[in-house]
Amino acid sequence: TAIGVLRGVNSIMAVWRPYPDANNIREIGLHIAFWENSVANRLSGKRVRLEFQQWKTGWVIQSDAVDEKQWKSEIELIKAVHRRLTESVMNFDPDMLDRPAGKQTTRNAIEFIHGVAEHRLYHTAQIEMIKTLAKREGIK
Image (cartoon, rainbow, N blue to C red; front, side, top):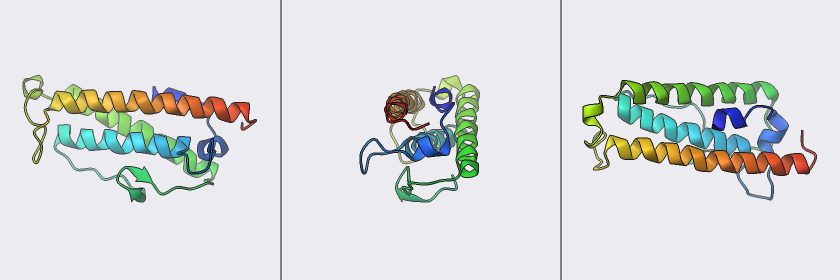
């Protein structure tokens, strides 16, 4: 999982980039959280906003340095959002899975649930790759 792949990632590795302008682990982790929160909002009907500044929808403002306290706080946010998504899916009425998931969409709930799971899997693989590259570069 994206949460498991973050084990052992400190603030230095979290902001390391494999090449200039590439997303780093921190940015990808918060990006996952943003979209999981969005789907949890749709499924639960409650609007919860994440408190990080974005440079474009779903992407935290890029930073090449965060302290360990901030990074640990961001990991806790990522975990909390994932728990919220899990609870929203578990509490969702199964009879509503094939109906539009909220206003201003024709996509049904199952499409959003599958989509966010696939999104997490894709970005978890990116995080694992960046973590491996960082270790090869001596980033610990």
